[in-house]
Image 1: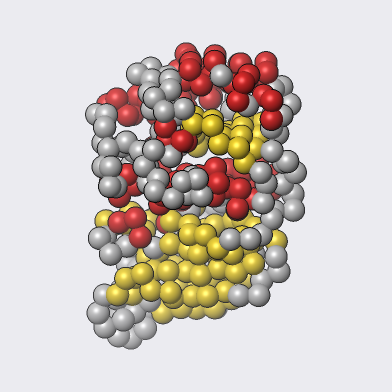
Image 2 (image 1 turned 180 degrees about the vertical axis):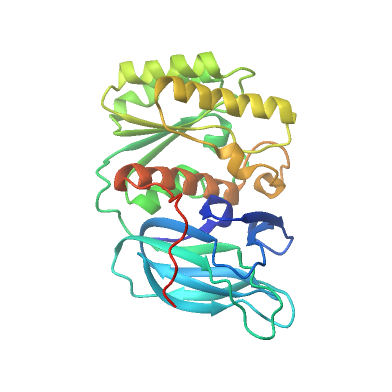
Length: 323
C-alpha cells in the first residue's frame, strides 16, 4: 500500500486553530494554535494505516503530545532557536495494520527556552493499508474537468480517484468531462457509471453551473433511479480564482443545499480550501494541481471512513492527559 501525504487543511481540528500562510509550508499554509498555557486543542486523522510521520515547523513553539487510539505515545518539543519548516518531528512505526486515530494535542507546556506553548502542524505522511470494513468492489468518480485532472501533470496517477484507489485498495473508475455542467454529467450516467455497477459514486459538482441547486437535485434523483443500491457522496467545488467570491459561494452553497434536500452527504471542499492559491498552480485559475487532488482524495477518504467506521469529530472538551 502507498505512503501518502495528508495536508493540514484536510484534517479534523478541535479547539482554537488558525490557518497561517507560510511560503515554506506544504501547499503554502500550516495550522497553528494560540500560545496560551492550556491543553485545549488537538488535530486528528482517522484511517487505516500502519505507520505515520508528522511534519511541522519548529521555532518559538511549545510541547506537543502524540496520541494513537486514545493512548499517549510520546511528547515532542517544537522549539528551535530559529524557525525551521517542513521538519519531521515525529515518526510512529510498527502499528498494527488497521484502523487508527492519530492525534497531535497541545500540552499547554513549553521548555524553558521557549516563550510560547503554541503548536503548529504542516502535514502527515501515512502508510495506508486496506480498511477491513470497506466492502466496496467498485467506486466511480464522476464530474467535470477537475475530476478529469486538467491541471495534473502526473495523470492518471495523480488524480484524486487514483489516489483513493491506492488509499482504499478498491478499484476506482474516473469519468471527468471537461466543461461539463451537472446536466451533462447526469445525461451520461447511464453510459459511464451504471454499467460498472458501483457500490459507491463520488461526484465533485458545481463548477460549470451558475445555479447548481435544481440540476443537482435532478442528478441525484437520476443516480437513485439508475443505481438504487449505490451509495453517493458529493463534494462542492474547490477554491478557485476564475469566478468571483460571490459566484463561488453561490455554487458551493447550492450544491450543499441540494444534498441536504436529498439527504446525501456533502463535503464542503470550498470551505476546506478557501483562499489557498497554491492549489491550482501553475494554471493559477480553476483546476487543482496534483497536490490539490491529494486534498480532494483526503476529503473523500475522510468521509468514507466516517461512514464506514461510524465516528464523528468529538465536540466535547479534550480529556486531560493525567499528568
